[in-house]
Amino acid sequence: MSEFKENLRPELEDIIISSLTGDAQQNALNFAVFLAANEILPCGDHGEVSYKGHPLCYMHLDSDEQKPGPWTIWTEGDYSVEYKNVPISGNIKEIAWKNVNICASCGSDCAPGSSKNIFGKDFENVCGAILAFTDPEVETLKCLKQLIELVKTYKPE
Picture 1 (cartoon, one colour):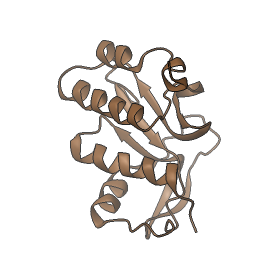
Picture 2 (cartoon, helix red, strand yellow):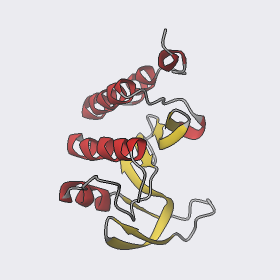
Picture 3 (cartoon, one colour):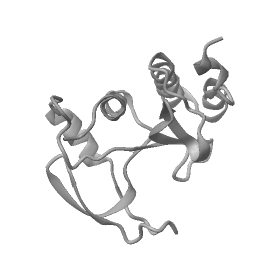
Picture 4 (cartoon, one colour):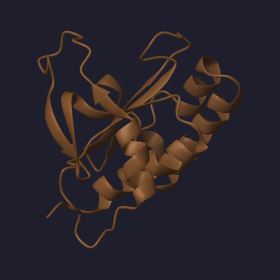
């Protein structure tokens, strides 16, 4: 058994099936396939999803309709810089901008948020978890996967 399979605890698919229904469930299952295909482990503390010990995003799954439920993904990364030899399409920028995580004073030490430049656009009161994707649909998941691959593969200049 590969190291990847040994480290899945508990099985992500089981959590998805017990927490989500309909399109959200199918989208989350497709996302789990993406993670597995890229040897990205959804087993870290506090929902950490990592590659070779480096966090790429954090994921929350439950059946609660109140945020962050039932499914939210917060990405890691510095989106104020261009990544080496990787053009960022206008579509990715637009989706990222729609998912900027504005501080909600949740009790974390980032309140009241800070000023951030995300792919060339300025935002105020941005949470420490810069981007948050709640119940992402197919197009948003395409963007999310590209952002995760970007952080996994490239270093910012």
